[in-house]
Amino acid sequence: MGPGSAPLSSHWFRSEYGKLVSVLARRFGFHRLELVEDAVQNALLVALRHWPKHGTPDDPSAWLYRVAKNRLLDEMRRPNERHASLDDATSAPLTADAQPSDATFASEIADDELRLLFVCADEAIPIESRIVLALKVLSGFGTREIALRLFTSEENVQKRLARARERLRELDTSFETPAPSVLRARLAAVHQILYLLFNEGYSSMQPDRLIRRELCDEAIRLAHRLAEHPDARSPEGDALLALMYLHASRFDARVDGAGGLLLLEEQDRSLWDRRKIEIGLHFLGRSAEGDVFSRYHAEAAVSVEHALAPDYARTRWHEIVSLYEILERLAPSPLHTLNRAIALAEWKGPDAGLAVLEALKPPTWLSGYYLWDATLGELARRKGERERAIVFFERALARAPHPAEKALLARRLERARDGDSKRT
Amino acid sequence: MSEQKYLLLYRNPVDVADYQPSPEEMQQVFEQWNAWKERFTGEILDVGDGLLPGGKVLRKEALTDGPFIEAKEVMGGYSIIQAKSWERAVEISKECPFLFSPGASIEIRPMAGY
Image (cartoon, rainbow over all chains, first blue to last red; front, side, top):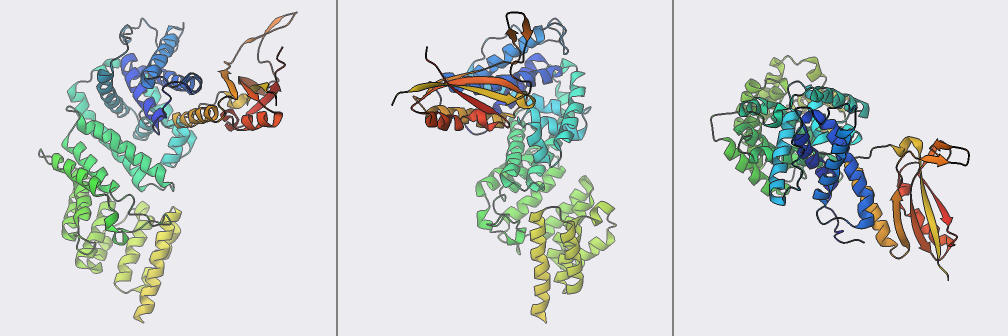
């Protein structure tokens, strides 16, 4: 083997892809994003055959940067290039091609990745395209991998990407040095991308746990970038990062040995990752500097209540109830009401919970949602209404989207049946 | 036992020749090439090279554009190995990462050694 062929860390190609695209897109203009991606893709393809033959270079990142940049320059010099020619006024300083030094390069990458994240959050890009674009250009996933992660078809991913790219081609390059006011205006959309990304990993139907975890890690990595940057950090961003860490602390505990989902009350709390909880608390503390209380604050606060409760029974349910009330105001959704009903039932008993649900007129998407029936079933079971509980659980079971949830519901249905047989 | 050199010729079906692997897939293939080279050190004389699309065919009568082998496949690259036996040459080739892409084939040809 050649010199310097130490094995690369896992996902190195993928993370290098995101870094190189970020740096080159900033230098050559975001309207050339697609061309930049092609050049980076090409550089990786070259490396894949060149390095096994000649040995991995001492500085593989710099090597890739050079190859990708040269490819990009070649493409742009080609006559009738469909993107833009070299002499177009918006082109980046192409003469600044000296090899960047390691130190400046590292901080430059962090800035550039953030800048690209803000480009992905452009208000002219449809929301469902933003997350796809971020996964493609910043996380280095291929379209098939994105489809798998977002539980959709590859064709759909390609369509969403195409829509994002259409818009980016028209982008004026003034985003080179975005004004702080532009950054702040777009911050909420950036948070939304990261929140969706994390939720896709944490709560999606994707059966493969490693894949889900990877999405959560990606969201956390990017949220860190945000929290570490003096101009991009905000109380909302800190709360979002706190929320991610607090949820992620339960990642291992919420599955049993066979990969089945466990309810919060069934989880072994000693398996919760204390370090993640501490990091979550740290960022939640930071998020309290200032007078903002966002939905991310409220959601993180709910998560903290669970993280700090000695056990399920001694959870401060009254706190959780009032946090869900706040959430209902900050980000109206009947799902928050459903959650409040569950917490209220823990605090004041099943009747109180049922009263909330009966007062709520659920939209059809909610009344057809398996968690709606599962909640009604659980509350009925606690009241000792065996027959009703079984009907609700059976309906929930039929509507559950994925084997893991089905298994969980089958277990609860069993419990509803058993509970009664013990009583009689 | 005398050593024999073999030329491995790599072929892809036309429709996957321009398949774009994701970075993650590329890293896997990269690691497979490294592992292949390491596993058969001494027997792989030259990992060889890839071949770019395009090219020309020259005959006495005329110069034409490629492709050259029958339209359903393209030549993607080559390596040169050295093996004690025909069986060993096949064994080494079977582990070659090139085979992992769908529809790929390797033509193993003993070199004359002129």
